[in-house]
Image (cartoon, rainbow, N blue to C red; front, side):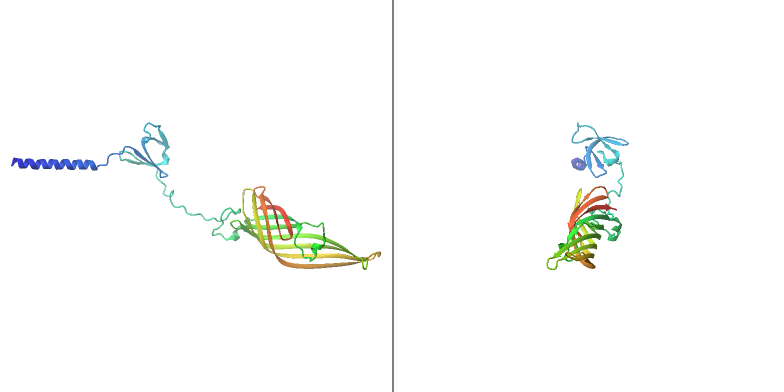
Length: 299
């Protein structure tokens, strides 16, 4: 009987010892380092030496004999110590990591380097345009059919005034106006009837056009192209005198003609920045004049 009790007692002690060993094996061993969690999400394993009012001093676990590092307290969200204690140093602002909503552009930039697509209507940019004042040279358009056969004389240079405002990225639209005055002369002599004809013609040209400009902006120079539909108006006045050789008498004849028409404007050139809101431009193409140069004033 005593042997039976002894066997039961031995079995119970062995079972208790086995359970104790298994429990010790399943326990999590204590950590040998501290975990620093920064406010930007970065995690650092270290041995924290001191937590001050403004600084936290620690040593890196991968360099046990290395120097002591310091970090601003406000850069640390929390510290998990090796004894399983946790300390929150800087509460996280819940709006810091919130999804950033795009802010609509109420007024698009003038320069056109930024996309101007927004809910704002294009006409809100009318007052944010540029004024272009230029002088033209080498006449191109004329309402006189045989103007190319006449001898040009000194006349008023064609003046062109343009206003353009942003419409889309790199695209401006606006109105172009031009006014010019040109003088021509012609002298012919007929040997058959000894008749001398002297003629002087003054032509005043005016144009108004709806145009668009596409440009590519670089650091100092911006090449561009202008195109549009133009209405031309020509007013020509002619004074002619007829006289026979050897006769001092002459006949004076005055005539005037008016001509209107539609045309297409296509010009290419470049624009250079001089000051913050002032630039210069040169372009070539069809219109009142082949060439044109002037200033650009941005509002």
